[in-house]
Image 1 (cartoon, rainbow, N blue to C red):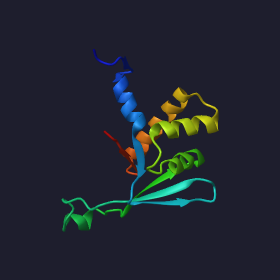
Image 2 (image 1 turned 180 degrees about the vertical axis):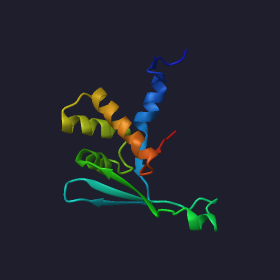
Image 3 (image 1 turned 120 degrees about the horizontal axis):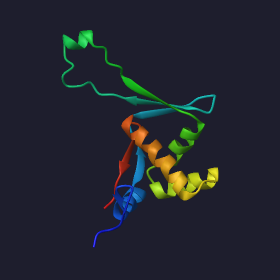
Image 4 (image 1 turned 30 degrees about the vertical axis):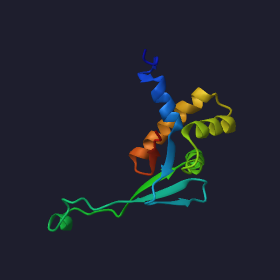
Length: 126
């Protein structure tokens, strides 16, 4: 018998996601701003196809910048590689007086954006 599904994910998938650990990209340099925001510069690699003379025409930025508001900076601080997603969701829910499920929706969506922008990686344990 397979596990019940919720929103297209099985209970086992949800458990694996909650046990995963967000890890900051080692190539990311986080700089707090005076406004409470956080600026993260993620170093980029030169693509293999970008060789002279193409590299003379197409400029390559040495880093991609991701800007986080104060709430995003708070989430970033929780992503230390030690805490699981579930612990981060619980902590965020407690700080902002949210239910676990409200917090889970907010955090997982935000983490997905940070992964897509290269600031975070998700370590999944077996």
